[in-house]
Image 1 (spheres, rainbow, N blue to C red):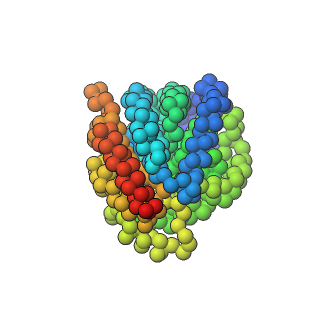
Image 2 (cartoon, rainbow, N blue to C red; image 1 turned 90 degrees about the horizontal axis):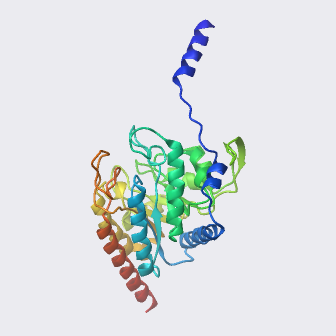
Image 3 (spheres, one colour; image 1 turned 90 degrees about the vertical axis):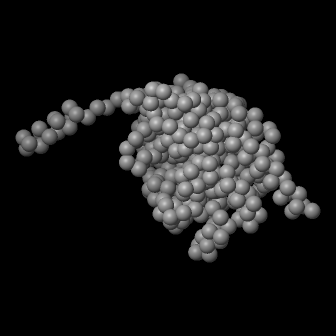
Length: 353
């Protein structure tokens, strides 16, 4: 018994706990206006219409692999907002605004966890700066997207997101499936890193149904959540360690193996589909658009920032360059999306002729 008491005392002295704002407190501190709430509701409906085939446009979720600098993120958002007016007849742009970064082992876990990029892990500041940044981007008129990673974090941002993704490492997680069933926006599930599609299909089936699960209330108390099910859950093909799965031939193989009709399809142009080479995303997207008449792909994802490539976190970093996965620079992204819009217009003319 003495040994147990000693062990408990040691645990208490080595464990550090820092109290964070409760979800309702952060939302009161950085509120969403009624006008912007309606804007988000409309954008969520537009995305759902695209996924259901009621809106012919291609949804393109584009932005940094992960946000580490609000200033460069806002500059990117401004450029994206200006581009939207040029392509809005064929493309619905959503800004990728990831503040959490899944890690295979260890590493920087994202702006939410370490906004100062110095291992200080000031999550209170991360919560405040992340919500502030989200509100600024939304105020520009852009819908935003994020990966659903920490179950606890969802309550702080569930009123702001227009679209969400569940990553390859978490598609098999029961709690992520349950949380997705409760979110008020469309959520895509990625296939596994080994290429398994069934993991994502099972997740979609689970998330589309109602669940009762343990969660955190807006007041920060543990509670039982009764979800309604997410009718807009869909599949994201992100390639695999063994190779890409975005091509028509690969999609046909997936359809042939599936026991039922595939859910709405979104393709990640990065990761396994680009062999982790960000510049290959251009070729991937052009192929997707060329084959879209046969695949009915509803959306795509791009990792894009102001500057090509990636860099390590240091005291001398390049402005507008990713600190996680490599990204396609803005100039290439801008021209690519203009070209894609032209290709989609031409395809539409051919179908109507």
